[in-house]
Amino acid sequence: MENKSKLSILTNGLIKENPVLVLVLGTCPTLAVTTSVTNGFGMGVSAMAVLICSNIVISLLRKIIPDNVRIPCYITVIAGFVTIVQLVVKAFAPALDESLGLYLPLIVVNCIILGRAEMFANKNSAIDSALDGIGMGLGFTLTLVVMGGIRELTGAGTLCGIPILSNVMPGMSVMTLVPGGFAVYSFVMAFVHYMTKDKSKIKKSFGCSDCAMQDSCVDGSGCAKEEVA
Image (cartoon, rainbow, N blue to C red; front, side, top):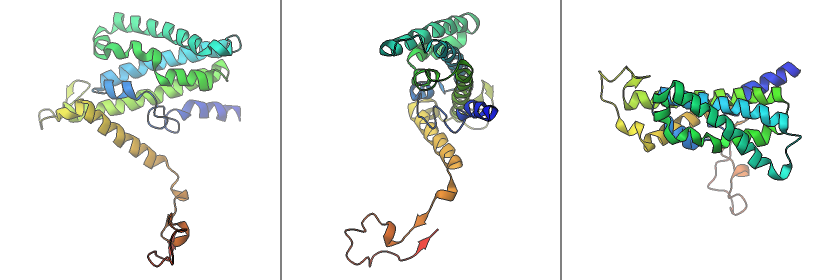
């Protein structure tokens, strides 16, 4: 039972509680950095590293941190790990650091990181918090990579900088701009919600009993009388 519980914690962030597509957190960096697969992957991995480390530390300190200053303490812990990640990226991937720009240090105020610290790490063990960080981080990274892939392929005709469609058809530059980001985000979110919703609970009703205007209707002559399950 415990193994299933830990597996559930690890996998919740992938689809069921995906931080971007279901919880709708971290939309600003999602829209800003998903112009390419490389940028999306770099931001996702950076945020996941901060999320895992901060979750573990906050979980270990949850009984020591006073409730009235817990949010400033969380931000301090998160900021420390963001600084470490930023320095590592600057040292080993300067091109990625330049591409991500301001959005890398802004991980400090990412709603996903702070939200998981408050809602999960503050109430659970270090192991469970680490698993939650991995799951949520993977869900965030996969979303950025998928959106980055779609926008890069349709906008520039490349994937990870490798020409795929650029020699066949011109890219749609709008896909690398803000409107393209919103369009891809909405389509991916709609697809995930459609694939994960419980279709067995959906009922199509055309009868008077389920009509919103039932109370104000005189005779219901304008409504169909049949219900289709």
